[in-house]
Length: 237
Figure (cartoon, rainbow, N blue to C red):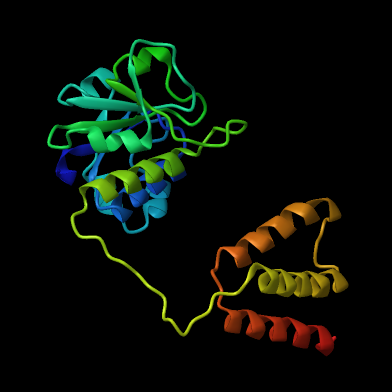
């Protein structure tokens, strides 16, 4: 398997920020071949370069084509990503099926525009369609998010040496009850200073606040420290 054989094709991307974020996502997983077909914004531009952060080299070495047919002419496999199942005579695969692909061949992952995705005409150029498993009631994924999910999966397939990260045995993860108590204390103090404005945005702000703390994988010691901080701030008032 070789990363050099793998390309990511953005077909008629509409937002500069997404193009830059896609380049950044590619570099996160050590892929370099970006192909852009008929982009709506001027390519490249300052916003693309800014959002690509440390992946400007991927933008500068990318290939730009006027149409999809030119972009895929040297590819052995073209895998079109789609949130919708297409009733076409084409092989439909999942992320897990990617392990069956021959990555010694030239493989391209094709992504549609943010507004409309890929049309059936564009899908017709593909050898496979790939659907990322999502909430069936909300399937739409941001362009860069879709690319990152696929890039990470392919990276895990082509990477030979995997690193294993372990926590120290002395570190004990906080329980959900401990985190909940800490978050509720934080919310209580924020409510007392009328932090959640406007009122109608309070539910989504609470969701975001909880997401921040729950995804941090706090230890029980860190949770106690933060609880002490929030309690102290409440007394200061």
